[in-house]
Image 1 (cartoon, rainbow, N blue to C red):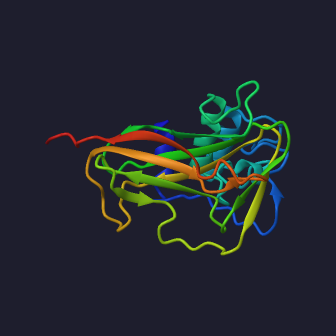
Image 2 (image 1 turned 90 degrees about the vertical axis):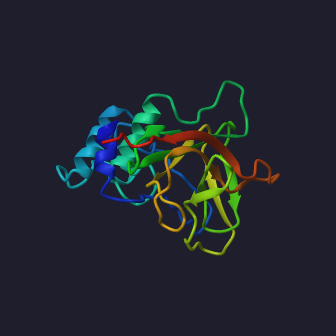
Length: 230
């Protein structure tokens, strides 16, 4: 797993943003399927890491290799693929309906300066295509708070979004993932102190037609260690 952080460290922040211009399906082929075989496995993660390292120009299914939906194929996508194969992402239990969300991190305990790779996964547990409505082009957010509950950082801070109502259609039992990297800075760009932080990830839409399950969210705690002494 540390290899994923090493490859991700070239970018202080990798974020996933989908701008929707019309109701759209997330597609049939699963996100992360880099080799076009219809399933998502560690082999797809290997291909993604080869692309990220410049050993391959493109993945066989390059669009599907972008598991985080950020327009890039890099180690963040490999992290999401491995989390999916390990069963860490959101999933639907038998008989479950509605939407469910899960937040995972490659590592929950790191040293100062080492980024947290975070994945929000959202599953449609309805046995039919179901849409969610968004008040703008923003689909999700990641929010970091310190031990006192004060806001430290959020992904959407300083970003601009299309100011129009959007809809996204999720397939029957489909899971969609969004990934970001938090580089241990606050919204002013300053490094945060060692300690424990609560991270909340949320899908900021509402499920149609009843406009329920708004701000679907999941939360985890992560820890930045005190650096070792000399």
